[in-house]
Image (cartoon, rainbow, N blue to C red; front, side, top):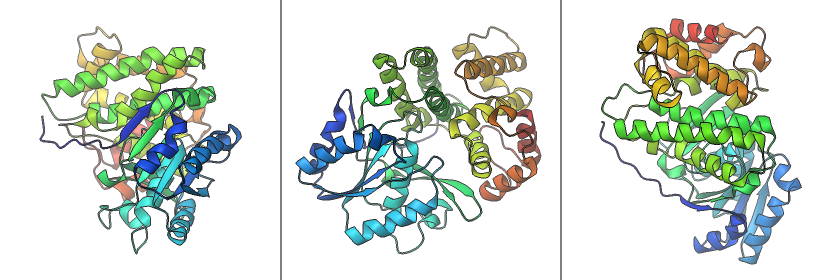
Amino acid sequence: MENFTFCTPTRYIFGRGVEHLAGKEAAAEGWKKVMLVYGQGSAVRSGLIDTVSASLREAGIEIVPLGGAQPNPTDTLVYEGIELGRREHIDALIAVGGGSAIDTAKAIAIGMPYDGDFWDFFCGKVPAEKSVPVATVLTIPAAGSEGSGNSVITRTDGMIKLSLRTQCLRPVFSLMDPALTETLPPFQTACGICDMMAHIFERYFTPTTDVEITDRVAEGVLMAIMTEAPKVMADPKDYQARANIMWSGTLAHNGICGTGRVEDWVSHFMEHEISALYTHVAHGAGLAVVIPAWMTFMAEHKPEKVAQLGRRVLGVTEPDDRKAALLAVQLLRAFFRSLGLPVTFAQLGIEKPDIATLVRKLHQNKGTEIGGYYRLRAADTEQIYNLAL
């Protein structure tokens, strides 16, 4: 096990009706004026924005609204929000929605106190150490952004999709009502389930040895997700299943599964290139295509951990690691298909993917060699993309 520091300062308020506590929690922080960041309409149509706004106003807090956060969020709204936040002298941001709204709010928060371009933080030009406070009202369990210090934004100039990871962007508090997720379309629910599983896989696949405790934590959360997911898909109004899925998404990405170990993140990097180039692709759907392809490659090059996943989580009994790993891939693909997710480029609606461009941009953005579990060069990632055809 590696040395580590683990801190998750976010205060999670979980359960029915907690969205009504937005004003109380914001007032307790001393905030007087907040920017409310949300998506393209569902939070408005459902009445959630009215509920949160009323709670804030009752607490004497002024609201500056900023709607329009989109899936695979771009820098356009971030720049607008930075300018608006500075002009209005806001104290904090509250994101209402899923990962897109939260990641947008985080990018605004890191950009407001900085004299330069907020993109400097995402491309690694300067370290991210200071931000305006952020809080969340979660409606989509998927990205885990309600508890992480991460944000993913696409720069429209060149369609470059990059992530930022910094402790200063962990939300101050997150209001999590599983009932708010009951109206999600089935496909969006499925994409969220895949995304949270991917966050665990990125930490589970590690070259670090003697990490039995976090292996078991990761395996346990994966098993819980795979148990609850069919219940949620069968009955969207199953509150208890929704609650288990929502909390799993947080545990998958708040850092606990990655303590003491080197992480991987290649599957996310590879998917980011797909959804940057093909903007119709939902992040979770792209991951459902990339992850099995990545695991298939690993079955031939470094099968041990994939085989362990198969035996401990998926019920594989095959003693040979390579064969066990390939069986694990088959079972994982079958699980994704059972949720209605694509598992090939063609099923993503990409009949002839531009693999050369995907590989070129991947290594241009992330380096000549990438990956923690197994180091990959361009010839390797090209092979993985081809395994997803």
